[in-house]
Image: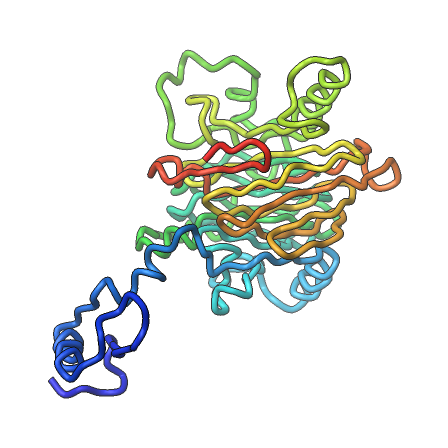
Length: 383
């Protein structure tokens, strides 16, 4: 086989520590490896087996005001109908070569729907959710069940479920989508199928509660008519009123001298699947964090990546060597094994709760299922 410049395997003899001494015989050996498409581990071990994760993703911040302004312009220029399949604009991490990926496993996008518009029905194996940082008026229709979307609501959807969206309001609405597209892309697991071009008149109705909420949305209770675990949550909406109350109660308990917060001034809840008590989606973990004004979280490292959105309040977040002041709607990425901490600078002027509220989603379930999860918190090593 003739050696060519575009051959997929290229090996260089180097005079370096932990490498074989250069010689004509070694050169000949390496050319033989190239011809047979072989790569010796001793030339790659530093990259393939580093002492700790070295993610290609980098810490990065996207400003909500900028995203919203661009999404609004797209709303007037880009059709939402079949083919484009959604007016969704993905966050592209600058370390990932221009791919539309927030991290190597997570997709995050702002989606924008104009008044009266329908996003046509489809389904895919990618697990997904919607999170609303502001506005209302859009209804997601999952399995022909209309589900209202309002500020602070978390709306998960396990893969391979038919879904569409409808804006029944007089104003546009934007929200963020989170999916495991990069993960399924990397492991060649993705399937996609078109559904109906239009939803029915019955699905354009606007019930205050969806059928899924009426069946599954009762804390601590599950219907006897639906036994057994499900891989993803059957509850299609987790309402802000419930999340807000849970966070407030944790901080109130702390103020009264009782346990409840994860660290001083830091309340947190995880959205769970009512059939298992585990994560809402097989590949995505979702949480809401509330940091009392003036409090600061301890630096924390995790194997696996996260995307955060500021739901309310203001503060300063630090990811690795990067640090930013953040306000409502801003999104940022925490790559694998990068230390993360946040300080709340919120007040009654910029936060309904007077605290910094952060929505977070991560690939934690994947790492736990593969026994690759690892966490360290400064002053409390949990590795």
